[in-house]
Amino acid sequence: MSERNLLMIPGPIEFEPSVLRALGEKTRSHLDPVFMKAYGRSLKRLREVFMAPNAQPFVVAGSGTLAMEMAVANLIQPGDQALVVNSGYFSDRLGVMLERHGAAVTHLRADPGALPSADEVEAALAGGKFKVMTITHVDTSTAVLAPVKELAAAARKHDVLVVVDGVCSVGGEAFEMEAWGVDVAFTASQKALGAPPGLAVLLAGPRALAAWKARTRPVASMYLDFAEWLPIHEAYEAQKPAYFATPPVNLIMALDVSLGHLVEEGMPARVQRHVNVATSMRAAWEALGLVPLPKSAAVSAHTLSALYYPGQVDAAFVKAVAAEGVVLAGGLHPQLKAKYFRVGHMGAVTKSDLVTTVSAIERGLKACGHPVELGRGVAALFSLSPAGERVGVRG
Ligand SMILES: *Cc1c(COP(=O)(O)O)cnc(C)c1O
Image 1 (tube, rainbow, N blue to C red):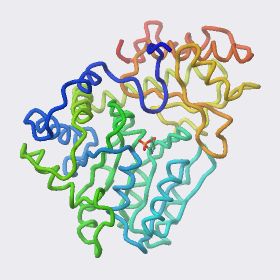
Image 2 (cartoon, helix red, strand yellow; image 1 turned 45 degrees about the vertical axis):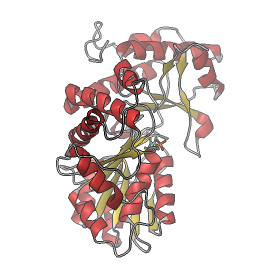
Image 3 (cartoon, helix red, strand yellow; image 1 turned 90 degrees about the vertical axis):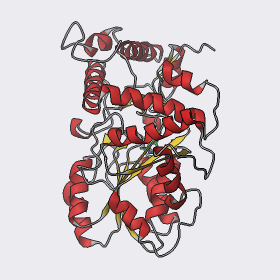
């Protein structure tokens, strides 16, 4: 099996070679000055990426789901009420987790591809006594993008803590944690942060830390407790040795390299690049007659696309495209799983990647017996400028 396929799923993604080289370097002691420097610098860089100068970052071994549970475990005590603005599979997961930690959960649901309206959220906030409200910024099962800024403002008005699942958004979508009044936001290394899977990343703002300090009983999970990790992260930022649980040294070295790329590119430029990529991809989908799952452009993510299989095409399509050298993801939303596929386009994605992906999709459609004019989607990708300048992606 060739290693030269192109990984275009919503995480893990294609990583910069420099990031992967860091992963392959000699494993240092977790107290080696070189590692301490990289860990401390990563935490500082995360404040820039999340736009949260006053938040406390946590980076621990685990996936995005662990980061999710860290948020819940530290904020929730049995009997607390939580409002879940539910946009799909990952919002459901957050709801289950909140319940496991003893919260009474209210879900605001919408049809797949849509979101509860701002009015519904406002009415729920006004009518309840919620401690936290959760928002899935990009629900990776549906490619629905939530208006975090507006929703967070509504929650703030009612003095409700705002928790954002940013696993498929932070590092790709516009996100200003502090300015938007978000109290906890989390992600994982393998999505728009551009490093291999294995790191749970969470930032907690001052109100979230105050709520954690005000708990009347300790966090049940020792591994997830802010109390264990706070001194460790403070020590690493101050370049002082500290130990609670062995950090995944190589992964953090790789994360530091990747965060360096993000900070160098600059968040506004990076966000604009993702908008440009998504705009190009949408032009290609339209030219190929592929219908997106999100019900409007306003709720469409820029980090991935979710598209219905056209005509008689079914899930065999994903295999057909893999045979053409591009790895896509199938559906994930339980109600629609067999009806759509997903294409990740975040992080270090290049123009060539877009061309390769759309071309493989055209050939895959053809292989599945769907009538398609080869090259039509590719031509649409950069249709606004024959030179492709509009896209502004590297390479
Ligand atoms: C991927 C993802 C998760 C889960 O992350 P894992 O690293 O797979 O545990 C949670 N929420 C969203 C929005 C995701 O995209």
